[in-house]
Image (cartoon, rainbow, N blue to C red):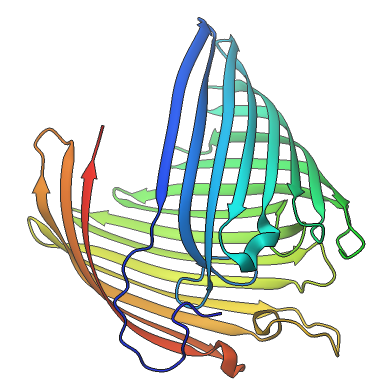
Length: 362
């Protein structure tokens, strides 16, 4: 299930996989106080994901798919301090990899929100959101959700902004005989704060609890917390991020798990047209224990951690003075290593990468 098909040393020429990512959108304004937009996003690409559907570029399985997401969003300015919003969308997913045929699905979402400016620095509102996911596979449980919440955001101090929400989420599962998913309900919500410590230096802290559609089960309840610190000084850009998440799938056949990711990134100009870039990250995956005797994938049974570090340079080969065309060239060296008690999950990669990118703005 590994993209390089080997755990032995190897030299590979890795050409970028085929892919298309196109978005078409238009805005309309039927009256002075009503405006909206219609958008359609078409994606054809290849990802590498683990058995939970989480991106895992160097240790995951190839997941090629075609998707189309279309929707309409509308806003009605009811008064200078009041607004209502309506969103409707449909998303279709067509896996192109046989192992992921059970991900073929159609999803719908609808939401209605009302928000009001309470003061010059505070906005509060109400929101109702609904979703339905229908799978083609007879072995997958269809899923529908309802969520009702109140929310607000405010300027807490001259240097600090914050947002908060709290609500109630209800999940309903139409399970086939082979599925073990069950519906449930839970309190959801979140809190975030962002502070500018000084010019060029800011940090943020957030917590969020949500119920969302899942890859290996109908849905999962997640609790996540994150902290970030960002610094910009002249041309130097640096950042530190850490985040922890605990996830509980709806199916009792899928174990719960947690992710803890910590990363550091740095970008520094060497000369006017070239920059040095460096980033490193460390991820820890811990799985809940399964009942004795159950046969599951190694990624669901064993804990593991992944360390990835990359260093390289980027060069501006060409820049159009009018800003329509750019050509960039980057070279990178990356070391990736996975540690685990399970030998099936251990690997080590040494990667050299060279990218030539042409960008045109229409």
